[in-house]
Length: 331
Image (cartoon, rainbow, N blue to C red):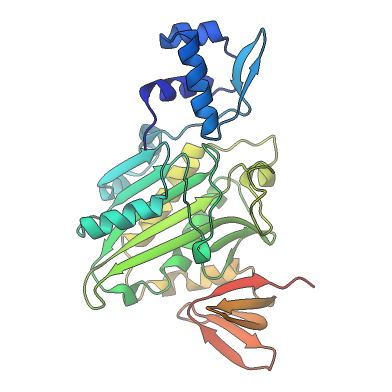
């Protein structure tokens, strides 16, 4: 969903985080004062907190850097730009992944499609959990790519994308980031982001994959109150003296994504395997692995050459797992 021109114009003026008098806003937007008040209320209903102070006017609780298509595309290399067939930024959407999964089913030949959003209303994490998605604060990004081989050829893709995410973060000064099998981004045992890869297609024919990423840039404690695990955001990692551009970081992530997916084949995971192991933040950790309704307790030994989890159970047996959710066991 795109906001109305009135909402977009008002939000654009308020995005700097400074005070703007009601008279000034009404004149600039050609609104009546009552129409301005209605638009302010409409933005607040979307979870955008706007402060109103007598004698000063209106301002956002925090400045916003809205996503800008031109800025992001201009920061991509010419080769990556050529791989993108469509690029949409939604003010609000249920889920960037859901949007592209639907497209992959209705137009199976689609490839190179990028979907970003300022806010998700039904973002999904592992096991269908809600992904907390406040407006204009984090990154919600999905890419649709069509592969010539079947789904089996994409083994290890989510792990390779994890390596791509870390490369993008490192380029912006965000260090000490780890990967938690199979698709979580961690920093000092706190969740920073998550990857969700959804594949569809015939088992022996071409297939489509939607590669989604949710990454925490700034979450207030109120916004994060429903998160049931330890979390972190980039603003906490870097501190208040270091501001990071959402648009620049989004461009870096897309650049790294396309470097992986544009050449990915069944043999490609071997190129990323050793690097993934360097970032493995679970090696040697005591965990519980949830596989359906089964819970397996053990110690993580890393991944095998195919990207499967190696877990030494409490009975001393080493087993491989292709899927499941891992939870750190606190001592």
